[in-house]
Length: 174
Image 1 (spheres, helix red, strand yellow):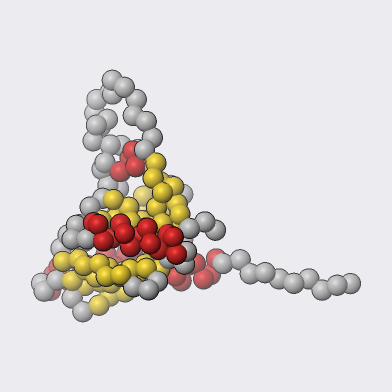
Image 2 (cartoon, one colour; image 1 turned 90 degrees about the horizontal axis):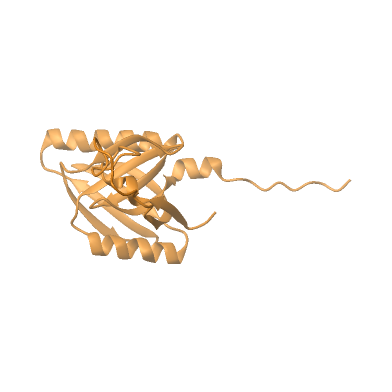
């Protein structure tokens, strides 16, 4: 497994709408838009509820991918955090955590993003988003965490990654 994922940024204009960007909705384009690819660090996620909101833990095994993710988080810190879950290239769930204050902290294995609020209703929304994204990722969706609509890391949940890791079997000699 490689430590990065290639993504096409062309369709990231309208979050959650694959295949449409603000420039080509409703009117034909004069010139075709070329692809805009970027490499995004691959990681595994753990989504958990915490007091006042949610916590996303991103773990990168590869040191180079971890460093890239931490640099992206550091440079984009303080921006809007969102998650987009996809399966077979189609958006299944897209959550923006605008109802809370999000902070990003670096860890030895990657980073930790915590989104919290003091308002009870906003806390319920954050924790509902946590449940939704966690369920999607635990059942095979790929999640992309973004800060200011810039992908920071992409991957599966720790739970799903453990269940799909190929095991090596040894064959006995005859």
